[in-house]
Amino acid sequence: MCRGTQLEATPQQITSSGVDDDLAIAGVLSPRPKVVGEIVSYNGSSLTALSGVQAPETGPQSESPEREHGLKGNLGIFALVCTVLAFNAPLGTIAGVMPVAIGLGNGAGAPIFYLVGAAIMSLMAIGFIKMSRYIKNSGGFYSFVTAGLGREMGLGTAFLATSGYIVQTLGSMIFGGVALNGLVSGVLKGPHIPWWLYALASVLVIGVLGYFRLDVSAKVLTFLLGAEILFVLAYDAVIVFHGGATGLDVSSSLSISTIFSGSFGVALLIGVMGLGGFEATVVFREEVRNPERTVAISTYLFIAIVGIMYGLTCWVMVQAAGSRSAQAFYAADPAGNLLATVRTYLGTVSYDLINVLLNTSILAASLALHNISARYVYNLGRDRILPQFFGAAHVRHDSPYRASVLVSLLVGGGVLLAVALRVDENFFFAQLLGAFGYAFMIMLLITTAAVAVFLTRLKAPETNLWHRLIAPGLAFIGVGAVLVLATMNLDVLFTAPKSTTYVIVAVMYSTVVLGVVVALILKRVRPETYARIGRQ
Picture 1 (cartoon, rainbow, N blue to C red):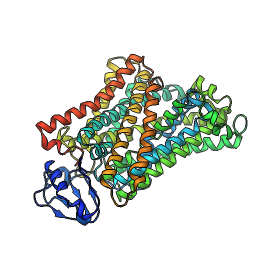
Picture 2: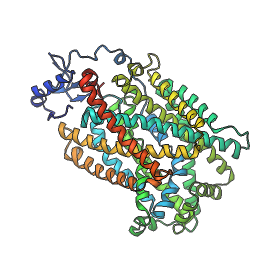
Picture 3: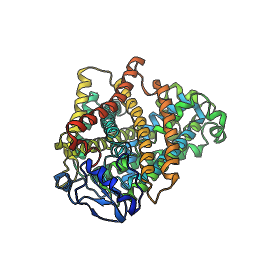
Picture 4: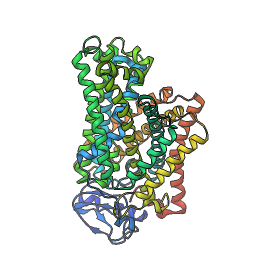
């Protein structure tokens, strides 16, 4: 809804002249509106409502060719959940990040914080899903923040999200190149090929998949994800069957003294960040069947699956080393000792297999990241913040093909720049991945506030105080606490010197400010473009 306008989802209040005047100023209502539908529906450039909300007969976007050839797809719940899970890279998270939560966090108490993370995300999802019924485009956090906090904050969030996802895609590609080099030359005893050639090859393959309809990527992601999940389930089952190193111990992980021991803030930070990616359910909204139902169910399924799977697997990892010695064991060599437990309990063949699956996990995550990045670029193109050229969907493939090509070029260019500058690839991708983790928490905090403001202002009949304020408010407190912990533990997210870390964090906040400034400038010099921000 428009800022400053209190709306009730009843015919008498929604048809008030205040709504029409406010929307007319933004150029989104025609002089003679008509009544359509029965339910309030916010779809960016227009406000439609059933039982009396007024929608435009004509408007500045009604003849846009992009509107005629928008994104389309046929994803169901299963395919969407797999696509979002792939972004999360379950096996990569379990092998690379989870040991850090145990070793540098609170040891045997770490598993509980994945459940806490799931609880925080569930609280946010309550309002997030309610709001998604009114946000009909695929702008993700960009559209949600615009609707809740205004165009200035919306564009600031869009700048941070777009740059953040592209940076994360670059980091994932570099990580994949390094990992594939290690697999071929180390595990498989093959030729030594520079990591950046593997990275560029991945950029090319993913760029081709991203060019086509999302359904194509979803099939690839589902296959790759299936192999990951099966391996994780096998790992969990075998260690539980063997009773771990010293017998199964549930009480230690549930003990208050254990949960709040060590650097529990690090474990909480990693636990919440492990739930990253659920935004993708709304980013792909235009490409799924029955969006309202599919997005809602997929979001809750994602949170439940990730929360339970990560919590259980983290506990199993503790059992593999023994509750009392787990923290010291994983602190000594987080990823290396996790792989050692695979060799011990599942054998050498499984050890080789997990090295292969880690590479496919990174590839799947890179593809999911590329697709999300392309859709942010696409939305900014449609809104004419970026050149309109990038806001076109392919007539036959219904994909953001031009935006996809741009993302491929930017990521490929980033790989080549890293080579030209001779940066240490392991150091470089670690900073990129850490930067996205911090940026994601900023975006999450802003969006949580936007959800609360939007739903409180709207007061739709199907929502109550729990949906509008209590659940989003609790989520805001939870996410805010995690962001504070992230700021206090920057050395966990970054391996760079403190001065470099502070610069990286400052750049993130400055990116939001830049978006706000650009929006204010557009408001004065290009009001028609300003009116389009976040509202296709």
